[in-house]
Length: 307
Figure 1 (cartoon, helix red, strand yellow):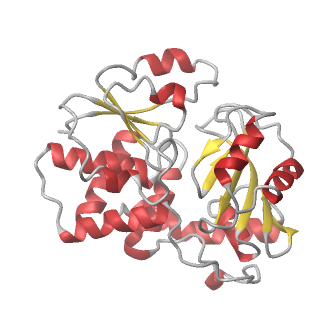
Figure 2 (cartoon, rainbow, N blue to C red):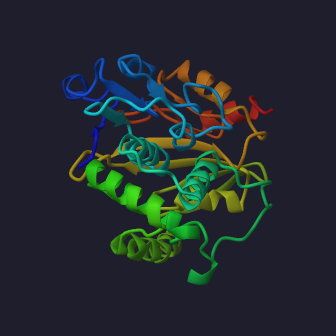
Figure 3 (cartoon, helix red, strand yellow):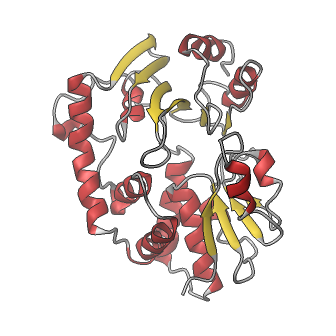
């Protein structure tokens, strides 16, 4: 039996968010990567978010959870999105609450998630051509120790947070991902290539060798931009759940820190559209609403916020 309740908050600007979030927020709630300050302030047990609200791009939530004070049993652990770092932190806290020792292998998987979450990939490798075949796709797939399968599985529409915590807990302990997640990761490579070939995803050089844009969505699409530049502006229409209205979303990311000042970029973009935020390696448009900022404005701000 899990020691906690697990919940996903809705962006505070989204319709109906106040009522939904009120059922989760309070004195017995721990936030994990609750990136909106308005919601984080209502997490009575604190908020594990070193990169976004903490400003520490060298840390991750899952690694911080290894030494974070263990919440009381029955507490609510909440986040704003299902990703490996946030769900992994929930899994780590749950294991510790159940007095399960973290083996060396489990700690290695925790570190693997941490490196992925903080974009610890080393120097940008330079310009590469776009994939010409399935064997050339490395943006998605099962990945090392099935981490890619875990990341893709968590991103699938309609994923249950309780199932997510259960599956990630098992992966941390054994390295095994659900069979359907592995199959989905393998299919994702085929889908990404097809989306690129069909024009559903388009990668362009906005500023050659410096900034690339990616239009359209398929798992792994934004990472295609790194084949052209170390800074990527990705635009997509996304749904946060099945049947929901698609919202225009812009994500700006850099291969690693040092190419642009993304916190300053978010601040500048928020002057005309409040709510931009993120970390030193990735920022996004306001959550819960369609982004109205033109891509050209993003690029202009990036060019004036270079490190």
